[in-house]
Length: 106
Image 1: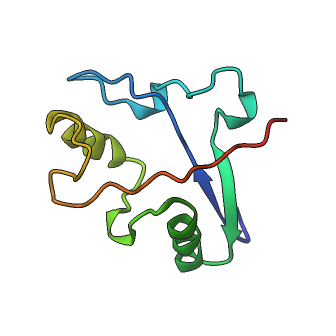
Image 2 (image 1 turned 135 degrees about the horizontal axis):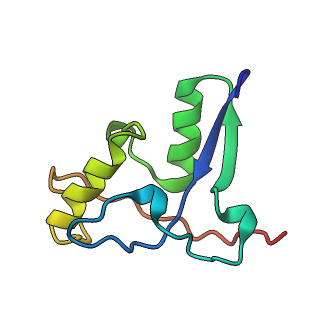
């Protein structure tokens, strides 16, 4: 946004195979939830650091793991090639715990 930063949580079904890493093409977990298809707004902040704090508090995201949109598919590819480990990334980073969130229905 022009005056603030918005933090969205995007959750999609992992339908990638050994060679399909286009996260933008993955379907949402709930295909009937049109409002959730883009993602859920977790919060807004006035500056980038405050936006990172919102993401950390709402999702357990690790500040040292942020990548831009153009890199996330490479990160996902590394995850797939590593056999989708449940404990840590190939670089040794622990995967964040997903919050137990119940989304409001429209």
